[in-house]
Length: 62
Image 1 (cartoon, rainbow, N blue to C red):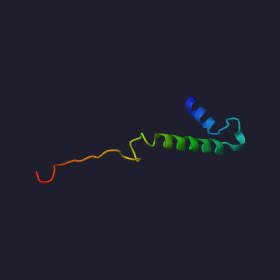
Image 2: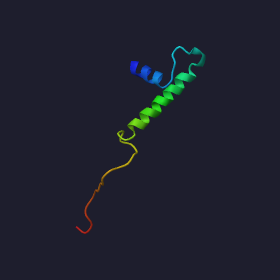
Image 3: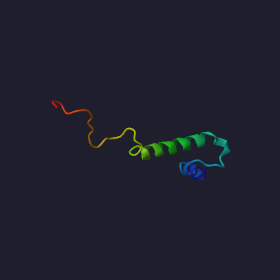
């Protein structure tokens, strides 16, 4: 929970601002989620660019 709070505060959430709650928390959560998605795009195993090739089955003519 501490990491989450630190991340959303760094993204602009101000815990003492009750006037704009929950909008400011939701906006900060969206920023954190977007940053995490961007940071993990290359290592998540989904999407991104593939390096190398893969072949299955038999070689034709054998």
